Image 1 (cartoon, helix red, strand yellow):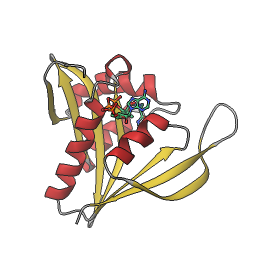
Image 2: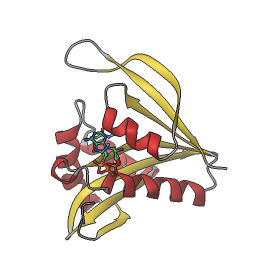
Image 3: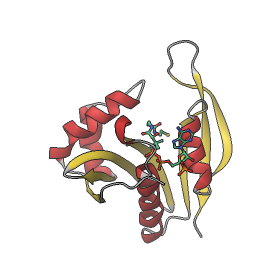
Image 4: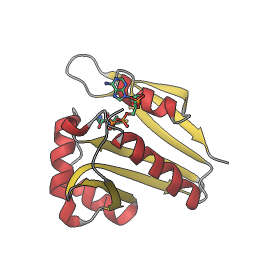
Length: 151
Ligand SMILES: CC(C)(COP(=O)(O)OP(=O)(O)OC[C@H]1O[C@@H](n2cnc3c(N)ncnc32)[C@H](O)[C@@H]1OP(=O)(O)O)[C@@H](O)C(=O)NCCC(=O)NCCS
């Protein structure tokens, strides 16, 4: 077991976007833009995970009627594998229940084994596949669609 400093979750603000982008650009092949995060702040649930006043992760969830869609989740590379992703995902589930969402949906690159195992551990099941969905260096990569029923 690894002990980590206290992780605090709080709503993302405009001030956080540079730190969030710094993470996003390190972990995504096709990172979101600054504007996409600004728009998300207005439209979606956006939270950051903080450790010793530094942003170490974030989540973005869209709510549509009784569905929650996990649009983005990431942890700063040097802080991964310590349970922060799981803490963020727990928050996604908790907030989705509070907002009375029946199901949480997400899409993940078929090759993203770490994220897929995190989602499976949280109870998500694979419900579909979008062929050649994600841009990639070589051929395009499939998207696995996963869902977690809440109620
Ligand atoms: C996916 C991601 C958010 C996970 O964050 P994290 O903080 O590393 O996750 P955790 O430490 O909470 O790990 C939770 C579980 O993920 C899985 N996991 C973590 N690191 C892993 C690794 N190196 N190999 C395989 N599985 C791993 C394990 O099931 C782990 O459970 P454990 O407690 O038994 O180790 C993080 O890897 C990330 O930011 N990746 C880049 C962005 C991304 O892919 N986002 C998802 C897009 S759909």
